[in-house]
Image: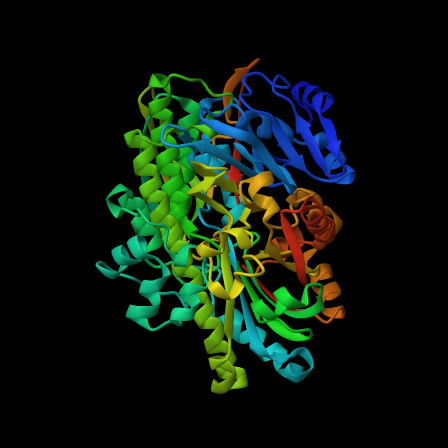
Length: 486
Length: 131
């Protein structure tokens, strides 16, 4: 999808360091700040044929943006913002962009540990995977989901995952504590959520969704930072469970509604935008405030969703391994990678908008995450693709200066879905994964092929960049032993 | 009336061509059916859809979003567009299908690279779906 603009932008790209590249102001019309990309040579070269850098340059035009428009090494073309991007707009009047956060508000990942090692799991892996796929629907099935009515549904939207724990008994207080923002983005107001969004979301808690959402059982293959690993409760050979999902149709509708509202605002705005998908308004306008209130509801919905799913994981463990093991399923942490948050960075209040990017606070910000991690930094989880490794990282203090406390969120796609399907069928991929000892549960052969490992960048390479740049530190490498794909 | 999926590394991009504007909307419906339809189902159903708007590109977004909404909340698997009427004020159509388990693949219809225009004698549109 290379265009003349894409080629022109690439000509302006300057390499500042081994893994730091920059598009200066002037590389693209309207840029207010430079764009900075954390990536190695190979990742930058892979961007020549897509619109990611042009999209990043467009982000740099947003009113109120400070510092840089930033991209992580998992950058790829998205809509509006590229995936793997983060920016900060200065409060109070900097803009907030629904398309910048994305339709899957608070898509994120949660990591649980089990008290068994892979070899102890033995032949019980297959029935455990079957039980997980049975009890956690992708969205097409009707089992396993939680149907909420008011006032409980409204409380979830305002208060997040703690409601699922305190009112429904689905999890523990420790789960809530070990969730970014305590599982609640303050300011959620359901009065700014449409009836359509409420209708979509009321029976979707406890569902994965399709596409690249999954639950993966893993084995801790390598510990690189024993101190951080101990703080996170990780040990070599241990079985872990990684949940990747977001706010489902509820969040999708919230974003759809508010993008359209922002479009109505734009003709009256004192600025123009290079891309309608960036439709935005200053945070202090009614449009900006009401979007934030609705987005917070969606973020809280997503945390509640992952809380329900985590409980289903515990239930599956109880069913297959017994109650003692289920009681010792421990939540490491839960991180969001599509969200806008009011934070303070470099001495000023800003609205940080992360689109396929993860908060990665280091020890200097230990007051903002659980005390167990105070000395080592906030946990960050970087899922690879099916069949490849995932990583546990620790946020580093270098992220404060370099990336508004942010790191990457995944491997980042390298191939389109159609390209992936041309290279492998779902059946072939399933056989390959199973030959590697990975149990697969997936209802869609086409969907499986689209998520093939080769469709993604090399996650080891992506993580290597953020470690070298100093924004997050490698802690442990996890390899898959089973995947339930949405 | 034709649709094709175009290479897009992150999402699903669809290009639509038709001899009439209404044909573009029907082609969009057909593209969505290819993405979300499943065979399993119960009774045949129809849904009447009425949307307002004079901007054809945004109306296209609304059209597809409506079908995504019906798929999720009404478990509707669309199959055929009937009685499509386009005017300056918007769109009315009846969509026939069955009640079933459509794939929850399409999260939303984005505004990215959105286009709806006449090129020579052909109506051409482009839309990117978040999946």
